[in-house]
Length: 379
Image 1 (tube, helix red, strand yellow):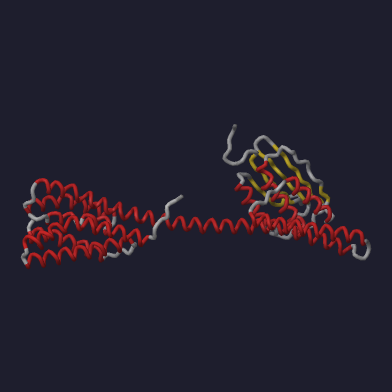
Image 2: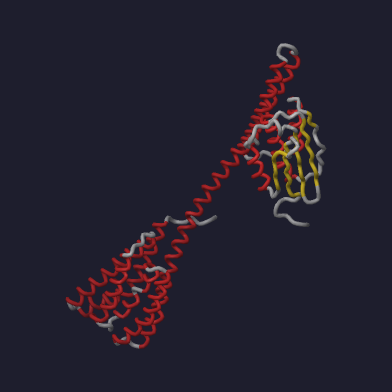
């Protein structure tokens, strides 16, 4: 089970809280010394004012930059923190631990400043901080601690804010992926529904027209057509339910049988091609959708008199070609809205799809899919 990512404000609050604990570890021992041991009113007021100001400015600057609310005035806040932290050891002395205050500004250098400027400022602070510590009279070990603590503090601040923004972008990316998946599913459903209902309703309309032509002449033919209409309507309802469930399995042989029957009923000469029973299972669905959409387009967008279907199974790919003589009578620019969806289906299956006039008065639809499922190589 994947862990739930907290809200950005909750993560930011945790980061700020941990930073406050770090600041407390650096500054509160010296402040405790002023309160409990020294007990000088002037020093105590100065210490409380300085520590309170540093805590307030530090937490505000960190929070604002975590929330991506950066502003040029933040640099003044960083300068104020550095000034206070460097002034307190000089005014209060370094004995009780005020030398730790020199490290406090380092954590905000890479948070407030741009990357290039922060590198320069951090490098300068790495050199100047121990020099200032020596001038204040700090022992050698604390000076060494200052020299290593400044770059580490700057890097730690940068990594903390960077990781926070990465987590926030990850959360946004997951939300966008979820929205994208919903959009893809809606497009798939709309495309499947168009292909299923477009073919079925066109066939029903055609059968109804045939029944209308024979209503005064041949009652038996009318009853036969009405029976076919009922069967087609039931099949369409079943197909729609299967599309909604997402489990519709297409058989190329079944689709070609239905295609040739519908075209013949419309007076279009069409023979069902031989389909090898050994065709790979994965080719039936994409090529079945091609057959279904091609039949719909022939009926809806042309006045074809014949249609020829060829299925060729090779070692590397399975190809289906559908040709009809209705290109010359097809309306200009009218290729059927489902052809774009077919191209997407075949491309997704790793194949190739072309459709258009052949130049001899025919309209040719060609679809080829790999004989092996995508991602599978030689055994």
